[in-house]
Image 1 (tube, rainbow, N blue to C red):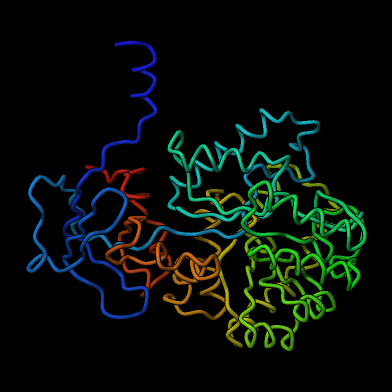
Image 2 (spheres, rainbow, N blue to C red):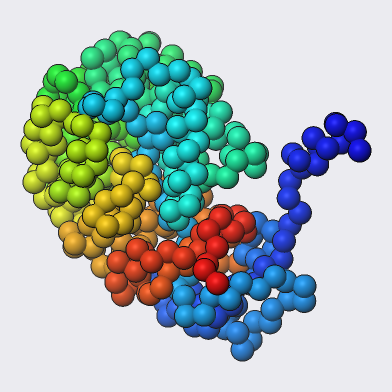
Length: 412
């Protein structure tokens, strides 16, 4: 065999495998009764059939994975992720090379997938490296979650983000540049942030013209826009301009949240970063006192905002702003985020939907992922109990599958 032939074999896509998951209960994300003692037939990347064992035969030649008594749910989704997070603190990396950033991003992507998170949205990355990592995962060179990305976050000079511009013309160019590079969302830093050393977290640094122009240009290119935002003032202008969603929402008021519900504008709360469970993370990275003071300044208001959003019915998609796999109060940041939604007023089913089908709806991929149905991609997680009865069942993940490929296998 020639060296070229060997290389082609190594890079060729894996042969589609026929699988059958047996003995588990399949959760219906719409709240209908689960399929008990189910057979889930997976052909290559997609789900071919789901049904009770009594009426759903295991195909001849299928590899059987017994999951007796487990509960199957869609792969989890996390809509606020920075794969190369680099916050103020003792562990902050200065002048980090592109190679180092790429390796950190890939490592955190793989850890995220192994933790049960099969789809993520990146909400600000460095130097276009996210586009390369996404391509390598999409091509099958490396395992990792499905990635939607905003590229570099765009801000007015001195704002919360990395690509600093001024005036409508520069905002227009910056948006087009990120879309040219492959951004499937645009992120605008329309208020201050916790990790900023200056400025008001509830400030509104954009001019109306800058904000409206950036959103218009993105929408003309078929790309949605999210706003890093804790400011009711910035929110009002952004809603008028047609923004698609807000991240964090620290100080958003009931009137703003009501308008978001009426217009279908998404909230990605990232509640986990302002609550007590994140303290161990901040200790680990050596966060300075000023940073912790800013976290404390938003915690209570952030929690009240989340409770109001749930009560009002504002559309919510889960996002953590910690690594999806990061430890938090005995579980991962992704799972703890879902638990906090339940503690703030969601039912367990609503919290599970916020981690699965609701993000899929926000991304516009809810006919492909976010539910377990024939024809959908086989992004599947197995847990020990029914998470629609107790969301804490998510702490017991024993199988992770992405596109029909077993990433974490159940113990034998």
